[in-house]
Image 1 (spheres, one colour):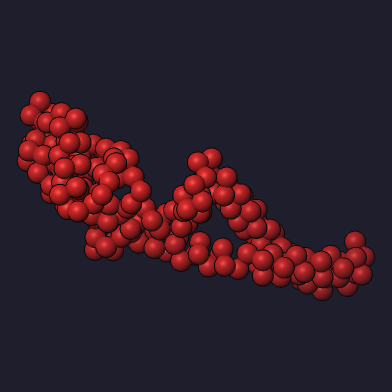
Image 2 (tube, one colour):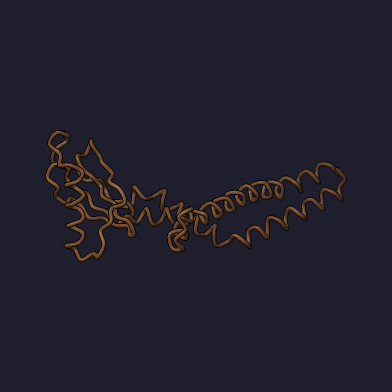
Length: 183
């Protein structure tokens, strides 16, 4: 490859690198900040991710039914002044004897003792919110897009941009060295 061709390729690479960075700057700031927070969630002293409580019984034969736990969770939430108490999912932790009850339309959750139904912990699931920011699914939620279209587009663009930055960044480092050694 001639020196002028190498120089032209280097200029084009620099241009691609610069404009990709300008276009996606905000996305990468969000991804960077949320990546750090998600990496630290288990070491946040319970702020980002609450510790899992331990129930009174590990023996499944002594546990309440899932239906009973759901009713207790809904009643507790309504008694706390929430208008709606739609359950998204139950996360059963047999080794801890608890059920985590996650609610739709919020980042709230309860940890219930599987044997007594007692509320062991009310938590804000901040790590879930940060994860939704990180992967772009929060925009799908805000726009009511059930297909996850924004998340797919967002993660595809940012993933391809990261590959572009890696390749163009390498070439911006390697290209001048190659030109120096070839002359």
